[in-house]
Image (tube, rainbow, N blue to C red; front, side, top):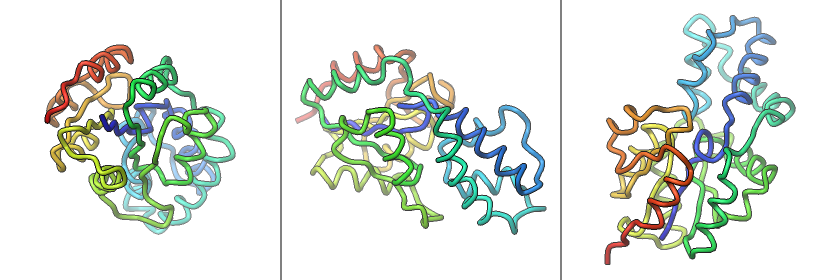
Length: 218
């Protein structure tokens, strides 16, 4: 089976890293830092969308400088705060050993995603990482689901997308792919179910169990 995994909030807990990097960026630009918890609602969105939300219309001219500075700060400071979720490494190894083909589909820029995966020794489990380039401002995550499927000749009936936000579910369903939500990320069960997730895993072991039991259609 072809398994597509979101990165932030699904494989890795990057919220502390994103929060630190966004707050430092805003402080350096002289912009008020958002209320605690606000950043969590934006994780998984394109970086331009995140900064439009936290800058607000009063500071729209700072959008590009904020994005550029954030990327520097994330690599220098934020990376120190990223951790793989408990049991994720073992789960990926088990799924890979069982013959499943694993890829990453993320809204994070491709170089940043690769840096995180290699830093946490997770990159070796994936045959591909599908993500926007740093210069890309507008994109649809569903396009990267499609590119991941095309890269390995996957068909919808033999593909599952795993993610923590409604956009992961939407991106999967846009191509007729089964969508599995995870509760340990930045979304909620209600958000995932409302988006049409076929299953929502409470723990990593639940995710592995569902994937191993999933019947592949002819």
